[in-house]
Length: 123
Image (cartoon, rainbow, N blue to C red):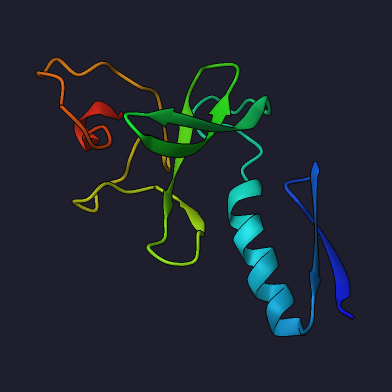
């Protein structure tokens, strides 16, 4: 039998995990908190944000979207373990938007034929 542990993140969200040890609790809660603690838009400051999963070109994209200004915070996925983490920098190490929050701008380049959107499509 495990132990239930609850933790509040971001003022609105409660996380609850059932675990067998303190180490397991910390691992589980940290994974969830990294995603669900984003309760305020980093672009406009609105608290009207919500989780969003969309599929494009056969890929799933995990984001938190602002309903006020349409900015998004995208999440990258770990290669193993199905974990998500906020994507705050591009492949060159440059910051994306405002601490990862960005608004989509249509690229003026030729469309790509497969794969996720290139980094130059995000501002």
